[in-house]
Length: 236
Image (spheres, rainbow, N blue to C red):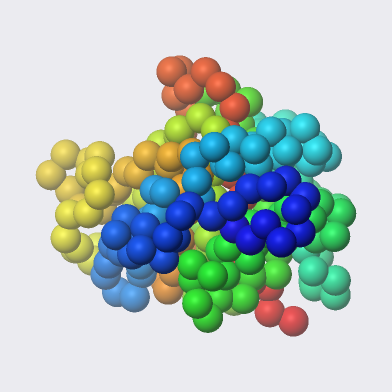
């Protein structure tokens, strides 16, 4: 990541392009869905610098949301950052306040690194989540809100505790695909698991939100904090 601003003094992994090309893995889910995973997107120590900043400086909140008609506390902390003039975000009956990129300048540095790794991408919003321990989670869902368009690209950068990220086909779909990654369903290619490492980048593209669900399940052994940044594009 460019350190020209000098705010935190972190840098990209040396020879970043070569590292990304050697570590980047692309998984074809079939029918126009694709996942890209880079386990070493950001350098290890610099990622801890960012983790400390995000953990202490972001105005985290744990909002009340509505699930299946019932009010409950969201099982993770959250914050929302967006470019000026975008439509308001609303999910599960909750409308987060949209902070500016200028409020937290290091986020602009991470965004620039993501754009460099994904040529042609134009992210203008960011949903941050903080999982305090293994009891925090996100249930099965798809980010298929109309706000993001028909084929949203979502880039997810992870810091801190490694957590399992699961993908499974929506029940109405029966397309068979080849095995990828660490398959978690016995004898089936309709569910897949990734361990999202500290400083990693995972990207969902194409019709992944239309045809697949994803989750970060509870895990007893996950006994420390994980922070996740999901970059998205909101058409104006």
